[in-house]
Amino acid sequence: MNVTTQMTPVNNGVNVEALISARDALTEMPAAAEFTWRAECEWLNGVHSRSTVKGFYGLGEEHQHAETFTFDADHPACFAAEDKGATPVEIVLSALASCLCAGVASVAQNRGIQLHSVVAKVEGDMSLYGILGIDPDVRNGFKGIRVAFDIDADASKDEIAAVVAQSQKRSAVFDIITNPGNVRVSVS
Amino acid sequence: MYSTTTLIIGAGQCGLAMSFELSKRSIDHLVLDAGCAGESWHSRRWDSLRLLTPNWMNTLAGQTHGPEDPDGFVTARKFASEFDNWVVRHAPPLYTNTSVSSLSRLGDGYIAETNRGPIRCQSVVIATGACARPKVPAFAQAISHRIEQFSPITYRGPLELRSGGVLVVGASASGLQIAQELAQSGRKVTLAVGSHGRLPRTYRDADILQWMDLARVFDEPFTKVNDLERARRTPSLPLIGTPERDDLNLDVLQARGVELVGRMMDIRDGKAQFSGGLFNAVSSADLKMNRLLDRIDTWINDHGFEGMVAPPRRFAPTAVPSDPRLAIDLSEFDAVIWATGFNPDHRFVQIPVFDRKGRIQHHGGVVEHGLYVMGLPFLRTSRSVHIDGATRDAKALARQISIQLDQSLAA
Image (cartoon, rainbow over all chains, first blue to last red; front, side, top):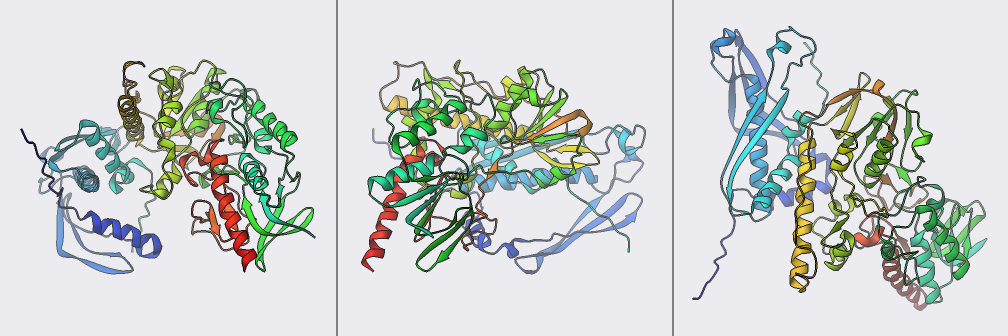
């Protein structure tokens, strides 16, 4: 029997060549690598608010997204709210999962691994004793976050694990969540 | 004023290897060292330290075998005495206790200002080592004077530390070894673990470095490396050299009572802050180790050694505490050990050859026509920081120096 292996180019929809040439270009131009991301949030009513994301700064100039994106945040009925959007903490979990998924796709593309499906299930545990001020020893935020990936790809188990490991290593949101950072809030 | 053809700054394994190569080529040269030959091995290593490379890898220039048993691990103290023997045997043109305060261009060559006066030369080899200055994070300044701070250069042994808790920052070879020694001395040790590696000491009946050597893991040239920047950041081999060929890893340390936390990120309100990314750091190290073992297994199979050595095996994943602490009040510690890596000290080089992070720019050790550097991580291969890597790099660079001098003569 004559077996031929057909090589099909891997396509995860990530333009790795563009990312790699951007990396090379930015290595020579540190100022262009400085980005500022923005969101604007307006209180609507109760604990319901709407954030708008439109412009950002990077590569030495202002940019606009292709369209204006909005995200509603609210709280569910058990918080005596109207549930017109996800809670802010669920948006944080979504942001973490999205960032890791983007990383998985990019790293897999770069390593020539074809993805068929990627699903990340994220859970964060929290005691309300923190935000309700019942116990000062309980933190407001998550006690811990678990991300479970289910990935179908043309690669071994270890290769997939290595892709997921690298996506964490290069993830902005993973870093934002796992490491301390300074936040300064002002009032005009 | 002194003048020489090639000035070698630093008389460690690199500087002496270069002297050896230049002598073979009859190139007039001078070796300077701020201390004596092998000074760092004499005075900048902790008391119990043994080399983590087996002695067959610890050969100085011109030696066919290293100190003592080729498969053993010489103590740093004994290894230091090898330098004294080497100097007696080879009588290199060495000025000890000679420190260089500046190196600048002068005409077609260079001039070094030293405590013996200026020295002119046509070419210079900077061989002052990769581990001259401990890389301590800026937030270390927030630590009160009550807490003693050490680096692997200033640390000597458990007896020099007060009896309280110790925070060891960094889990490469130095951090692992010091954490283990302190835990064995009965101290409560916390180890902050950033990205690190894991290796078994022995695998399939041989030392892991024997297999890595055979499978040519150390031989990839700098010109062929995918991401040289990254390769040059790879920390030391996470091993310890002991007569019992013990493993040293995070599981071993946890069994000795060491508490693991994530990478140390900051100090706030008197509390050390650690990254929540410990789990990924640990699984990355396990995955990387398994890739290396795959490569070794393939080599063994391809070369027909299957069946002659123990069968392949995979080690259990490193156990990670389910809830590592993210912040620890510094009052828990009496000492902090910064095993966070090193930088070379090239501040005396008054020539614009540095990148934006202050690192000397070079192509396999060639900084410019006439200026060379040695002993840096992945200078030419990953062997460049091994003892016997110095000999290989010296051979390659001596060839360049010789070509350069021929050109100067012809011009």
